[in-house]
Image (cartoon, rainbow, N blue to C red):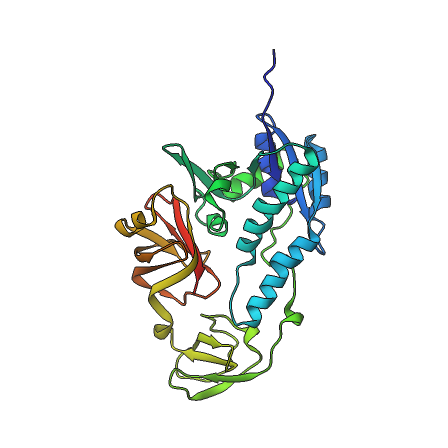
Length: 339
């Protein structure tokens, strides 16, 4: 007598990562591939081809309007304010792990399904509580972009690529002759709105207020940026601040760009412990997606905001990006939007 397999949703992009995830899971679960349809993308078509090749069911969720409202419009508005938003983190929370699975469940008439993806991240369990952790491939680790997910969602996630390297995934796809085996990765955002967010030119000033040059509109710059300032100086200058009200860019030296204390809003406590727990342990924080986490201590925390102090100064923590804190084992405990 055969045992009925658990039905799970697999978020598919048509790329090699979600395709190999399907390959790894198809014998253990009844997989239903789900792809969100977004403006100017053929991901749903590519994913359907992979699903047919692997003989799994696939559905497309019409999410163009939601994506425009909750990702593209949010990005445009943030850039106009001089912030540097993280549209991947926004999309993961609002759509990929939020609205899209719910819509898919309604379409299928199957509520509360577990969700699998091709992210390079892991899941660990401690006393019955599940956490996101860093992927084994530290170069490809994508846990940073999952930091906004509420703990209730984390409890039902599957990341089959968590212990794999990109090379291993490519090799497995090639061996299985998957249509996506050699598909190149997209390193850019999946939408282009640069022409919609240009602002008025203004002054670039030093930390003492001295006018150093002119900028082309604040939405073209981000905190920590070095190239493209067009200023001749004795040493390289970095963007230290963006003042929307005065329409100025504040520039300074690399040393001036480093900060030890970083504060964040929209506290996301991913543990099942009270916030004060974070004040008593050593954390390892990241202020950008790339690079290794650095030791830090939480200095204050509440349901809305928290602050940490790093042992070593961090280069240009950028408002709008995420401050993500792990423990020594790479388990994600806390995150927020950098102020």
